[in-house]
Length: 507
Image 1 (cartoon, rainbow, N blue to C red):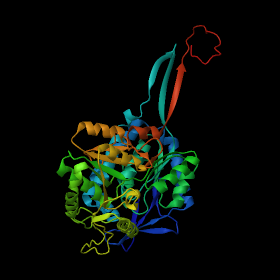
Image 2 (image 1 turned 90 degrees about the vertical axis):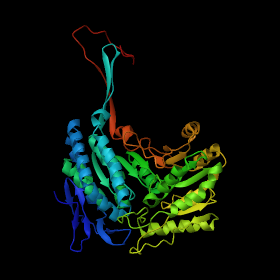
Image 3 (image 1 turned 135 degrees about the horizontal axis):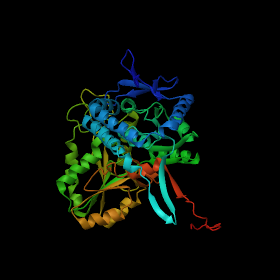
Image 4 (image 1 turned 120 degrees about the horizontal axis):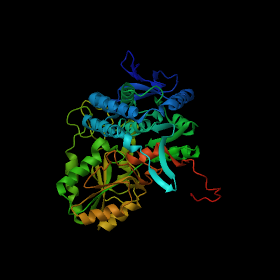
């Protein structure tokens, strides 16, 4: 098998396309550098696929679907069993690649891969996940049952912040349900995704069942409008996700768009103080705040406002450094442009009257002076009309608000247009039950700062954070990647007929 990544004499890798089981060099004239966020070193080049290359990938998937849809559940399951074994064997190597291209710490990179691996493990349960239903004698001698059948060619568009986990949310579940797949990883960090794709082929995924194209808006639009693609999965920004959902839906496709967030953590005075502070700092600044489930807003209720100085002091203990360096807590953000945007939003917070308690703009990392580093940053006295509250900063910035009561905090969270995730820190079961019932968000954590569900539950979302009724992985994604067919059957013996029935009733 030829490699997904070819090295040049200068050790800059050239990322390939995967079309019909072959890693091929793109004929595109448009390429983008893949840059190590800690060093600014160019570590690879990725092509923006041509229209013909996108069409070839979809055509390969369409041809493969003709036979793959008839492949037994047992065969598909065994491929996933082999795939999860290979991911485990190569996790450390892929984590180093991920850290080099994305910037997150090595332990966090391994966590990125592991959370995706959990989905592959869940895909091995397809024998029970894809079961239909059966009812005997719904009418005299009539049985009704459902079949869950694959829908065809599916596509996935994934973000830069989880270059391993999000692709693994998508193509394993689509494939194990009997579909074929075209993946478009983020053009900013596709190397680790390509290493996973190589392992999928090694595990036995046949030619054409999994294909990969790279690019930007032109490639995304081509996938959203191609008549042979039946479903599209997207994770990324609200702006792009809304575009993908609208364009794909207008062209008759199922679309699930998991989009932006402004995740709040509500802290009650009875919460465990030390554990809560540790959780807030880890969830707010881990991965340099580049998580769709990052805790970017802390709402101190009542007397818990007195914990603010401890939050600041704990944040000051975090070590900012290159992701591969031992002991690093906060790595660089993905690009110089991302850093400039984060710094701009911090400056807007100051201008709009928020109190800057901890400033991460001037952080310097010896040996990595050119890196895209922003240190932990905390604002207090934040109002809901400020840009730092209204916008998803996607950096290591926590904004702090206060509420007098739990009811006030719930109302505050529910007024925010986003509804991805939320957390409550308390030791009161009554308060937790009230909160989980009344809050309008997809993921709710009770003393859990990043409540991303395990794969046998589905990732969900609410309001501006999600478009489409079915979420990634879990039971919902099996519904998303299959078509339900309902069969009603009667078998006649040699007994005389009962005459013509001109009604809709079964007799």
